[in-house]
Amino acid sequence: MAISDSPATLALSDVLAAAKRIAPLVRRTPQIETEPLRAESGARAIHLKLESLQNTGAFKVRGASNRILSLTDAERARGVITFSTGNHGKAVSYVAREAGVRAVICMSEHVPAYRAEAIRALGAEVVIKGHSQDEAEIEYVRIRDDEGMVPVVPFDDPWVVCGQGTVAVEMLTCNPEIDTLLVPLSGGGLLAGMAMTAKSIKPGVRVIGVSISQSPAMLESLRAGKPVAVEEKDTLADSLLGGIGVENRFTLPLIERYVDEHVVIDEPEIEAGLYYALESHSLVIEGGSAVGIAAIQSGKVNVRGRTVGIAITGSSVDISRYLEVVSKFVQ
Ligand SMILES: *Cc1c(COP(=O)(O)O)cnc(C)c1O
Image 1 (cartoon, protein in one colour):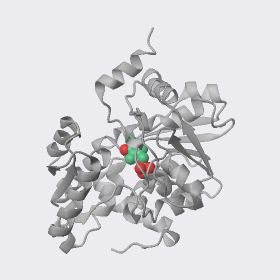
Image 2 (cartoon, rainbow, N blue to C red):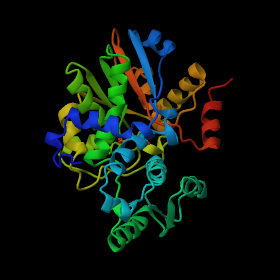
Image 3 (tube, rainbow, N blue to C red):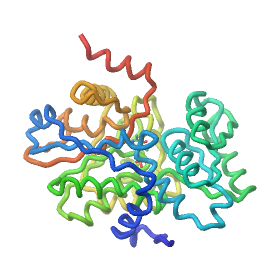
């Protein structure tokens, strides 16, 4: 199975092929309407797409399964490797186990033990090496090259982009009247895939990327016209931390081409978004998931009269930090 090696020729057909390929490993997550935010914003309707209920707790399983289920027999025999510790690492571990492929996940000594345990529990081999993510990456490169393992990267890959794009297929199939999409943005695999998909299905749809003020790497790269590194600060939305890769080939050009608007959300707004999901729907979501709600709640995006779809991307929380945040809102 082939896929284009150029962002310019990726197409809706690649995303529809992905949807079919990944169906056995991916849940068709529910999409629910949310009323208080609709009333407050004057929107016609607001739909939350609950990828927080996706297998492994985040949408990342879509991209990972599209990549791993497309491997040739020779590649399957060599196994897959990545160095992400968060939702992508979990997704790769889960998909590899289901597909019967060996998986190695590299991480540094500083990654909390519970994260390593979560990945081991899904069946992957965890390699802990070095004092930083950069040192863990050096080990990743060494094993990849020595053992010829196949890298599964978190966002800048055509298979991954098309896998993430399947979220938009489901949203627009479930609610064809959606005319505005709000999508959390970090490395941009999700936004690139969803924007390309949505614009191909419904060209008039308005696609908005939502970044965090603590790590707006894609936004600064768009402004500079090339990938730039940003200094990372502590954030509740830890899934949105990180750069876009100095050799970015796919997500930057796709986002430049297909995305209409960008907004940036700060920490108090993320906290309010988290609390909104809990109070209104008894939903526990992670910080990186709350930014779409926050974009409307804060008044930074005007959705009056629109039919909105928001990607609620994941539910991996550090429970004690989560409880600390939401308890601030309880009198
Ligand atoms: C990875 C992730 C994102 C951002 O996705 P990108 O493709 O890196 O932009 C958003 N939310 C959650 C929960 C994630 O795990």
